[in-house]
Image (cartoon, rainbow, N blue to C red; front, side):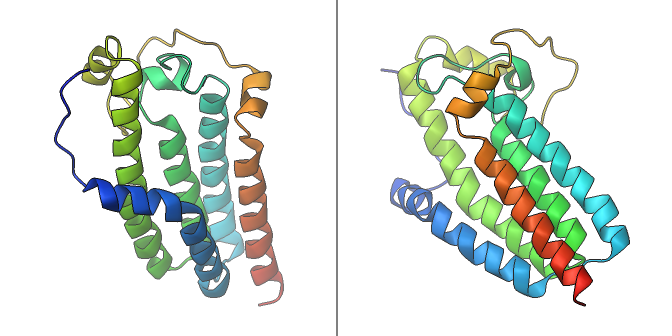
Length: 188
């Protein structure tokens, strides 16, 4: 087994936030619903950005065979965490659509305090599962911010894998967020 790497977040903290990720998501949705004050212009800018993040998540999910193979192709050739980059982009689009800086701060803090420890734990898991391949992959592909212009090889996107990974749930979440924003705009 490869030597363990230094971590940013203590394991008990990372374990706790990983378990609390979904319940904390409901808190974020409640704050989003309560505080948002969209306009037609903010929706026109924010929702396409959120849709682009959703498309990135979908592409990544269609190339991902969890715990079976190390994903290195498709969006995984540009960033080790395209699902989380997609999540960040969806959140940025939704926050842009809300016109509330407070939500930008809240979502940014949540991403840093919840998703970075989760990314760290997942990387430790991948180092354990793929001890020969993961270190060289991690050395050439950035953690989160993508390196563009990289050859897109590896596993092709398949709808069956997208469905197996249940990525349609993210689409349902974006639809719900969009409906909340539309209702806030309509009834304002």
